[in-house]
Image (cartoon, rainbow over all chains, first blue to last red; front, side):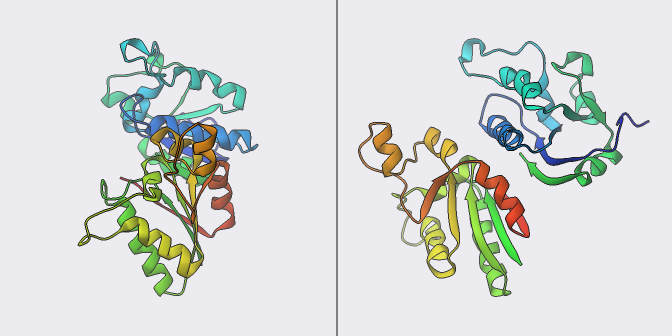
Length: 126
Length: 130
């Protein structure tokens, strides 16, 4: 059952495979996406593996005092980054559903992943 | 073919940087060009000016410098990633009131926009990550 409403397309696909905090992977991946959007490219995100944690609702700096990614994700719309693909298996394996996430997402099944990648001119994998 | 490399791993901490160098040398030996290397994330540590590994180990920072010297390969380092990790060239050091510079030519600090450009101006962009 395909949830992808239209053929994936775009200039830039940034894959997010790391959770927020504990390192700079997610932060620096999002910086690439934002720079691409600022340069006028059409940008999509694909969250896989632990990357799906990045969109979990209710995040904040908490006792760590680290600026998390929630505010960056809230800014995505302003940058016209609207296509957020999420690997369905990664959500399920972590006991998450789309209702746990901060923003509307397009769930992608494993066979559909290659379609998402093929639809973008340039791909970065973090 | 004109290659660009994206290096995301620091020297020695992960194999990524060494593999990137080995790939560069192999590609050149095959007659290709490696015109640009972009260092991002922990890859910026490959530009550490004061790196002083033991004599009997490969000197990765020097190997990148040699690549620039012999092939004209541009060595570009993301300024934001470098600054937060403490790698500053003379200009940034002065701007931030620090004495001394931890990053020098042939490595050059540049914006992340350059990375997107590189993907368009080279025929292949190969990523080496931890």
